[in-house]
Structure formats: C-alpha cells, structure tokens
Amino acid sequence: MQPLTAFVALLAAATSVTAQAGAQCANPYTRSEWRQLSAGQQQAYLRALDGVKNRPPSAGGNPAQWNLEQFTKLHWDMQNPTHGFAAFFPYHRRYLYWFERALRTVDPSVSIPYWDWTLDSQNPAASDILSPRAFGGNGRASDNCVADGVTAQWTYTYPAPAPCLKRCSRWSILWGAGAVNNIITGQTTFGGFRSRVEGGPHASVHDQGGGDCGYLSRMSSPNDPIFFLHHAMIDRIWWRWQTKCDGQYQYSYNNDNADPADLMPYFNEPVSSVLDTRAGPLCYVYSASRSDGDISTTCPNRSATLGGPTGTASRAAPTATATAAPTSPWLVNAVRNLLPKVLPSTAGRLAAPAPAPGGILGPVPGAVPAGPSPTPVRRPAKRDGAEAAAAAAVSAYPNADIVSRPTESAADKVAATATATATATMASGAYPTTAALPMPTYVPLANYTVKAPPAEDKKDLEHIRYPSAVSDKFIEMMRYDKRKIREYEIEAMHVVDQINNTPGYDSPSALKHFNEYNKEGRYDPVAGANKKAKCLPKKH
Image 1 (spheres, rainbow, N blue to C red):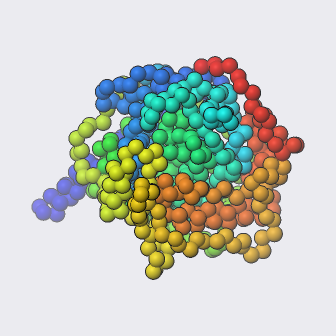
Image 2: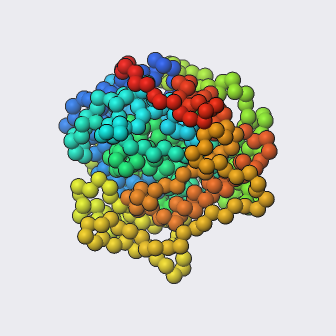
Image 3: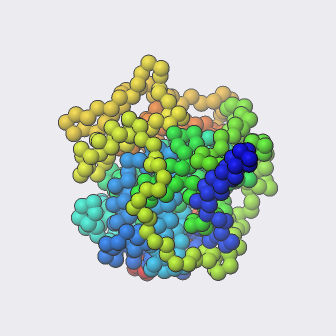
C-alpha cells in the first residue's frame, strides 16, 4: 500500500499546484497593439485612463479601486525585489492585471494595449503613440511639461507635488524586431531570457523615454501612461517565449534563483498562478504583430517536456541544440522562410486577428475579484545578501527618486573576471557603484561589408541601426550589471549586422515601413526628417 499511498499524495500535490495556476479560460480576451484598435477604442482607453488618474484615492485594499498614483506608489514600494530578479516578469504581469481591472471599473470594454516599439525602433519620436491624439510627445523646452495628449492637464501629488507630466526624452534607436526575436529564439533558460529582456529592450524604452527629468526613467514610472503599454509589450515578449515550441517553455521558471512557489511581492500569490495567461484569473492572449516573424527554433525533445508545474518546482529548462556561431537562430529561420512567412504583403500589416465572441477585445471577465490577501500563504521569494544590502540602502534614502538596484544573484549575471568583483559603496549619500571592470568591445564579424547607418540618419530606408546604449545613469539607478548590459547590446549589434548583410531580407523595422504603421505622417521619408507635431484639442 505504500507505493499507492505515495502515488496518491504525489497526485494530490500536483493537482493542487496546477489548480493554483487556474483552469484554462474558454474565451480569453485579446490585448491588441495600440494601432490595431479603432479610433473609438483608442478614445475609450484614453477616457478610462483619465478616469483612473483623476479619481480620488481608495482607502481599501482592492487595487481595482485605486487611482493611478496609488499604482505608482506600489511600484515604488516594491521596487527592490521586482527589478533585477526573476520576479520581474511575474510581478509586472500581475501588476498589469490589476491596473486593467481598475480601468474596467471606468469602462468594462477596455484592455491594456501594447506598444510594439520594434516597429518604431528606427524613429520612435515620430510614432503615433507619442502624437497629440494619444499620449503626447516630449516636454516643452521651457519646463519639460507635456502639453498635448491625454496627459496635458494632469497634475501629481506622488511622489511629490508636480504641476504636469514631465518628459525630456532622448529618443534615438530602440531594439528592433530582429534583436528581440533573437532573444526569444536563442534563449533556452528563463534566467538568460529574463536578464536580456530586462536589461536590453526594457531598459532602453525607459531610459530614452524619460530622459533626465521624466517619470518614465525613474521608479515613479507608472505616472507616465506609456509605462503600461511598454510593459504590456514586455509581458508579450515573455508570453511569446513561453508559448514557443508549442508551449514547452510555459512553466520554465527555475534557473534564475527562483521557484514557481515563490510569492510575488505584495500580492502574496505564487508565481505559478501567472505562468499561463490563458488560465484564470488572467484569461488573455496577445494579438499577432508584423514584428513577430518566424520564431520557430530548435525545440527540446517532447520526452523532456517542460509540461506543467510538478510539486513545488517547475521542471528543468530544455537544452536546445546550439546554432553555429555567429549566425543568429532567429535570422536563420527568418531567411529560411523569407517570403512566405516573414515578408507578407504590406496589405493587412498590423491587422488584428478575428474578433473573439463579445467584441474585438473579447469577453470581459465578470465581477472584479477582491484585493490580494495581506496574509502570505506560502514561503516568500528568496532574498540573498546582495538584496538585503540593497534593501537597507533604499531604507536609508527613502526620499530619493533614483534608487539603486540590488546586484542580481542569478547565474546568468556572472562576475566580469575571475579576479575582479563588483563592490557596492555608500558614501556621502552617493548611490552604490560597481567597481571599474573592463567593458566588452564591439568587433564587427568577418565578411560583413554593409555597415549600420548612424542613429541620426533618417534617410536610409532599408538598413537597421544599432540600438542606442542604455545610459550609465540608468544602469546605476537600476543597479544592473553594466558589463552584462553592454554584452547584450553587442549581441543586438551583431544581429543588426546579420540583417543588414542578408541579401533580400526585408526587416519590418526598416524605415521604409514606418508610415505603414504610423498614419499621422509625422515622418517624412523623402526629407529624412520628422515633422513638428501640431497640438490638437483633447477628445477624451
């Protein structure tokens, strides 16, 4: 009877953990790219956003009743364990879920759209997202206040009283479709994937969008509504990685000093509850985008499936067959399927999939669930010495708007050399800084003759530019491993070289496609310059 008893216990444990992830939803709704929404849907989202921003704060513990600045405060309060660690992805997924529920208390029809900035990567400042009809552009030269878009009349009380939303954006070049797809196809461990996305494209949008004065480049970043569209895109990148290889990476969360049983900060819910967006309580999927391309890759053998969660730990991450260097696995597949799969006709670019029952956004979930329980039900997420030290540093400077991040303890953030170690110091109120280490240097790969155009060149419509480097200031604020960030940027540069030197390859990020996605015509491809935006009356 002992083997039978053990089997029953194991079955009960597996059933319990699977139940925490929630049952598959019959009709998950769809989060669409901003430009896939109709004009009416865009205005509905802006009205709901304005409603959440300008309503009074809620005294209760249900985040669905909060206003925008309460979400900003939560992001601020939870900054330490949710950046630079495995919790980055699951925590922000749950965070977006609650903000979406808050929006739906104003308009039950809306969902958070994502901004596919890979399509705008060569000229983000001219994107329709940043137009007067949407979220407004850069701040005025006189005071850095954004004077157009949904935020034109916004004022703030948190983290300090402010008369406006400020941006001093330094938009240059973001990560394009090829570089992002290369992360999705090339990374077979959660740690390697998470570290590259967080330190690369995620950091790039925050850093360039906020500049030296804006909320977007600080821990108060949710005060800028671009935050939510950007993080929906980041969540979508994770979703694409999870669902590649027919979902064999769905529950991969165990090699980044992490465990699916870890509790998400504040929400006190296990990570396993958000690993599948198609399961309750999340119940959503993402629309297809022109940037997706072909993300087929060498997949693990089905006998070594990642499957669902088992007990309190996810199964081991797969080991894919390595692609011969230096060719990117994404590019290999893109070229292999160049015409039929990567280069559809321009007709229908960014077209949304067929509407789900109940409308284009799909059915709206029923009653808003109660707020998260304040009582932890399972063990908290891991904390190591570096995180504890960083937490103490944050406590010592509670009013600082730029707070240093903990050095990551995950295996993919290794020491720069065997003899040099990164050390943190705190003197005279200075932020912790890492010891000077040799930085990696970009070296062009052999036999590549086509060079990437410079970032300021807006006349080259065919070739892709290198993503702009994340500023040292932002890296220090986040306390990322600077050397690893530079390595990731060099990886992206090599992908750009491969794209530019592949005859016949047509990147969806190329400037020749820019005005196919952006209908307001703020970029003049003939002149190779952006047109000055005209302020329009608010329509929300």
